[in-house]
Amino acid sequence: MPKSMSVVREAIAGDEADDAMAERAAAVEVAAGRNVLPIVEGVVLVAALLAPLVLQDYLTVFATRVIILALFALSFDLVWGYAGIMSFGQALFFGSAGYGVALLARDLDITNIFLVLPAGTIIGLTFALLLGGFLLLGRHPSSVIFVSLGTLTGSYAADRLARGWYYLGGQNGIPSIAPMTLGGYEFSEGPAFYYLVLGILVVVYLLCRFLVRSQFGLALAGLRENEQRIAFFGYKAQHLKAIIFTIGGAIAGLAGSLYAFHEGFVWPNMVGVVVSTQVVLYVLFGGSGTLIGAVIGAVIVEGVSFWLSDNYRDIWPIILGVLLLLVIMFRPLGLISFVLGERERVGSFGAKPKENKKQTGKEKRNAAP
Image 1 (cartoon, rainbow, N blue to C red):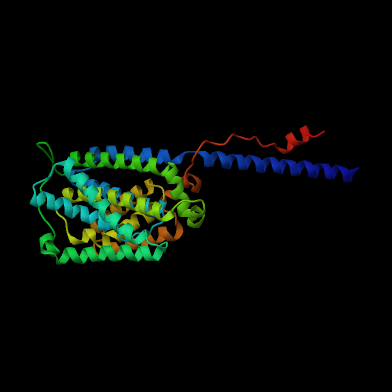
Image 2: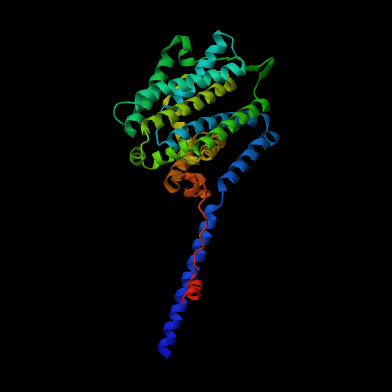
């Protein structure tokens, strides 16, 4: 009898352990199902809307520059975070658009916002289409190293060309660009320019969010995770890469146009390797493949750089480099991974599956004959 009692107790204890494990698993599923991403996006948007109300004038000017760079980072996150294309030439589209609108303002006196911003976007799209067609649409699939070195070479060649071409101002670039206009109104540095840039960023962000949550975005997610399997399903992987590469170039061109008019001049570094590497750090720091991670990364990196350069003028690049290295080592998915799970990072597609209630140990015992 004592032996049989002990067997029963062990069985009951095992059932209770199963119940506890089932409850913990259910709790994990509920936590995983929470939509953290919209909360993060809402907090960032509210903070951006309120920023000019609490910041001093010179900080509002700095914040405007940061938002433009966040738009630039968004273009790279589409290319790398979703399609897996490591582009070291994103600045080529950013800077070429900046030079293009600067020439329109200098030589043709065209500064209307409805002309220069579309022109900059088209310039970035065209350069990305040409470079992407050359690197991605060959007879054989392009390797990651080939595309990386190809974009790096394109950015370096554009930098050398801009420095040696007198028509583009050479080393000095094109200074004193006329302000961007809307009718008789001129957009100068301040809250008006800030909210204009913020509005453009929000619109582009929503379009990108719609894109990556569409069927096309699902194919991109699969392309990033396993390119060979996506090709096996019948998708033309290189064509998908070329499309998203071109879209990223268009967004970078839009950002470059805004940057040129905000800063009032363009220079060869805008198309060079340094700026191309800079945008990679934004996305690495914030978190790739999330869109909002690129925005957060640009804001934090630029904000920390501004504060460090003001307080530690001699060693601030070293401190910033160490911080970036620590984040990359211990949080490979970026700072956004502290609040965003892997499942939500990839995203959900299609209809939600029907809930299936799992039977606990007690329910199994009661259902047993």
